[in-house]
Image (cartoon, rainbow, N blue to C red; front, side):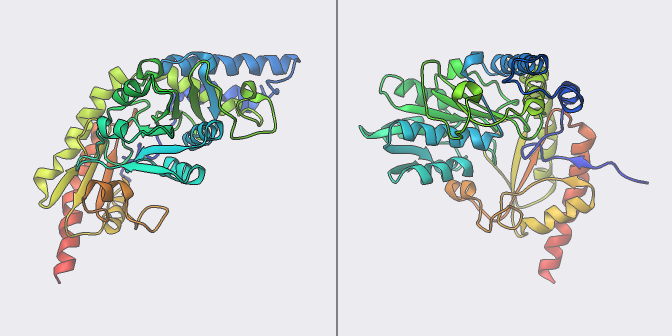
Length: 371
């Protein structure tokens, strides 16, 4: 009998929502006009694109004119960092647990960087971030929720404290989007990056919200698309799918279900010795576990053989050969972590499968080490 696979890696990328697939299909099959043209085909795709912009704006508490579509959350974050520092070069304040797209963009754009540390839960102190700002600071870039351990950060406090100081604040909301409410206006940020594929939208779509009245130079030049804020042909199918996914997304309804699934997955802590939960559990769809005595890679392979897909932030299973910078910053074992993450399509049988097979895999691997 073939056992259905349990996909528990939604924090990497989620399953495409049927609403997004249905919305995209016409723009893959028959409606392919350049939205910058005045002919009927171009006008039709322009209407679809602007409808998607309104859907994304409504989902994230922004005005449609504040939405700049991008190819990904990574591009959105790079645009925010590079644009802010091209506008006003200077000192940058960020934190030790930011996603690599923010860390690398900051390192490329500035030689003056202050990195604020975090506690053992992966949370930064808003006061410490604000205190790191100097008269030369041009940008503060902080995450709304951590992508590895699921800790939601006190971003609104940072934005409120810096609102009157002339320092731009970029918020990376890619991990939070679709799982907790993200309200660009309420946050009070100047720039905010989100992505489509982690909330059930298609790959190849993201957005940068740019506060009304703020002008930052585009990262991609060579065209007047996106009101001259991003050059290049518009990816109409992906952005239409992003808008449809945003319209279908309902964090208020989905978050309690996701939290129940993560609570069930967390029961392995009582079944297997030597497990530690990393993070504070405030993001409802993420569970990060430290597993004593066993490397992450064989656990991942063992789970995969049993039809369960999860992820690890450790060196053996990521795209780089470095231990997790997030876990290192937290002061925990950066080489032995397992991330279980659920999404809109996850079910209790998916999580039950993980709970069923995980203890035996760990026990067997620990036994091999003692031989």
